[in-house]
Image 1 (tube, helix red, strand yellow):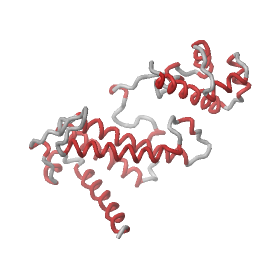
Image 2 (spheres, helix red, strand yellow; image 1 turned 90 degrees about the vertical axis):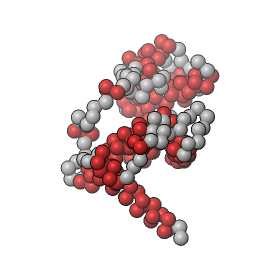
Image 3 (cartoon, helix red, strand yellow; image 1 turned 135 degrees about the vertical axis):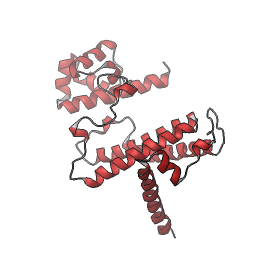
Image 4 (cartoon, helix red, strand yellow; image 1 turned 180 degrees about the vertical axis):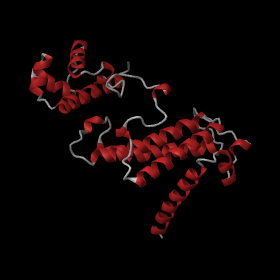
Length: 243
């Protein structure tokens, strides 16, 4: 393991053990006693000043009921699970994941976006461009991540140690990341092959019209058309504001 990766793992460990202790609502002294170390040593571990041994990682894993992979930042899930395609349900199965019936606009927008994304990925697959697929996926993930962080900071009780990237730089870096990803996608679409990338295949399958969308996606084409309309309406507002 390189020094940079080792350092990143150490930083993740310090951040995560502090977050877990706070989530459990126990003092540093109580946690130190339970883990068989001094409070001063636990403080050093939580601040990332000192690195612990494997035996301590195992103790922490047992104490908080989480996996070692989670503690070391190797998995985002406390069980240490690696997410696979078959693990993901097609629809929400938990009532907590669903939007309240009273929030009809949220319900509408959720369906609109979900249907449009399904069409989008179907169209992307036809370009046979791995670069476009990768960059588009990361672009959408980054947008979701940024909005998730906005919701997260709306409650001051939420612990920012949940994230590795500090809040002070997160949103600016999201914008920078999205700009770079978008530039990469445009390059692929325009036939400019960047280092390590590829270009989009241009065939009749990638010809897009309102009619072709309606014919190929009769149940959901209106979602994509409405997303385009809503986005352009907002862009027009911004353009007019700058005049």
